[in-house]
Structure formats: C-alpha cells, structure tokens
Image (cartoon, rainbow, N blue to C red):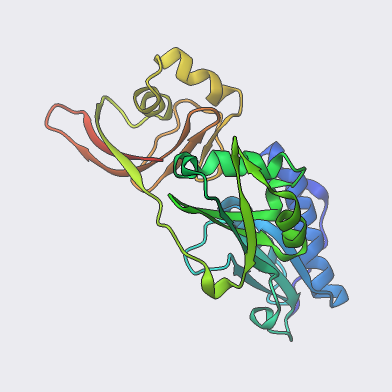
Length: 266
C-alpha cells in the first residue's frame, strides 16, 4: 500500500535549525526519484547527512531506492545514489575518483589533513565535493567527485608551502590509511559533554561551554548546544578549532566517578 507523504512543512521541526535546509533538499531528491522517476547522485555526505537522507527515504515506503558509496567500504563521507524503486542504485556510477598528491620536497612528510583540505578549499572547491583524505609521509590520496577531478589535477600545485604534483587514479589504486588516535585516560565526575571537552581540549569548564553553546560542537556529526549532554562509549565529538575525538570506553569507578578512554584524531 502506498504511503501518503503529503504533509505540512512541520516535519522540518524535527531537525536542528542548521539541518533544515539540507533536509528540505534531501526530501526533494527523494520525492523526485519516487514520483518523477529521476536519478540523483548527491555530493559527499557526512554520516549525519546520510542518516537524514535514509530517514527521509524510509517515509516513501520503498518507492525510492538508496545506495551510499564513498570509494571504499569504510569511507566516512559518502555520496548517495537515489533512484526509483525499479532501478538498482548500486549499478549507477557514483562519480568518485582518486586525486593523488605527491612531491619531491622533503617537507611533504610534515603535511597533515588540514593542510590538504585548506589547499583544496583555497581553489574555491566546496567541501561537499571532497570525500575522505588518506595522508601518508610520501603524499596523499583524496577521494573527490569525478566532475571536479580534472580541475584539481590542473590547478592544485601547492599545499601549504610545498610544491606538489597531482594525478588522477582509478579507485582500485586508492591507498587507504586508517585513522590514528592519540589515546588519553581521564577520570571524570560525570559524562557531561562540557566536562569531557574541558579535559580533552585542556580548557576550563566555562571556556569549554562557549563553543558548545555557540553551536560549534557536534556529537556524532549532529550539532549539540547542551553542555550537559551525556556522552557514552562510541560517541564522536568535534569542536570547531579544537579537533575531534571519540569516546573509546567509559567505566564507573568505586568512587562514583568514571574512567574514560578517549582517542583524539591526529
């Protein structure tokens, strides 16, 4: 039985204000696939955006098919392929390729994710056109939308102060680099967000609350403005200007405190 998805715009109220613009676009993509038989390949989505697309697709009772691809199985950022239900979205080309960045300059080994990201954005590229970065001492492989690959191959000639060369590679030549974490052991009175951020980022509790209340903190890629939000093992937290970390484990101690193992992304 078909599901009636006609409704007022009140459904947008379920999303954080900064997510509503994206949710509105995502609903249109899915509606076009389900009702007008179009195929949509999105830009790269973060895990929260992918969750929104999946939740909206579920409202259409299977009339829109959905497939996510980030270039390799463990990709964090992925493009969504949205098709009518009678087409196989996995058979569509997600339009992902590898941009390889190399250099003969020894300083290349000192570059990090932020350096490569800054160089791409400095060319006027939107973040949504770029997937995961795999940084090695001898260079970097970046998953990029196929439609901008040639532009980047021509224009990207410097990362930080290092002159670089680029090449476009097929996906099977991608060299995946697993994320490395710097582990910290904390003993905290509670699992409150502001308390964990305070200890991990080495800020006072009051200063840790500022970026949270200003909407510059995300928990599992979703904006979180409540400093008292309780965290749990598996949560990923990012604070603008202070990096990203994951709660690896949290165990209560005999003194009614918590022993928390945190991994900071390098």
